[in-house]
Length: 69
Image 1 (cartoon, rainbow, N blue to C red):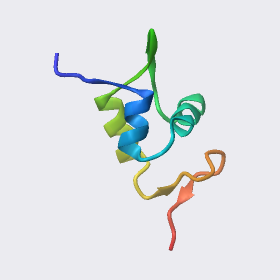
Image 2 (image 1 turned 180 degrees about the vertical axis):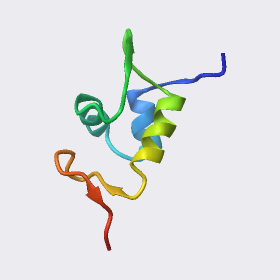
Image 3 (image 1 turned 180 degrees about the horizontal axis):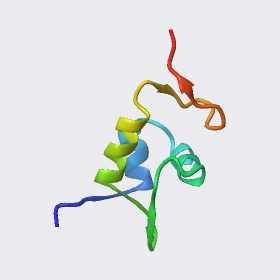
Image 4 (image 1 turned 90 degrees about the horizontal axis):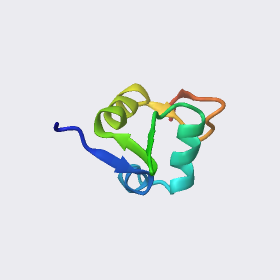
């Protein structure tokens, strides 16, 4: 099995956000997690999230928009 599990802290470091932001993404069901003692995110899920929300403004998770400059 080549699937890798990331902790919330690891995902926060990868996304360069604080871990509360990752918890918010999970709570809003924008990022899917599983619980094995602590919350974990698979590599596949993280890559899917990045692909799905690429080019989006996620600064307000209740109002996700296309990124504009």
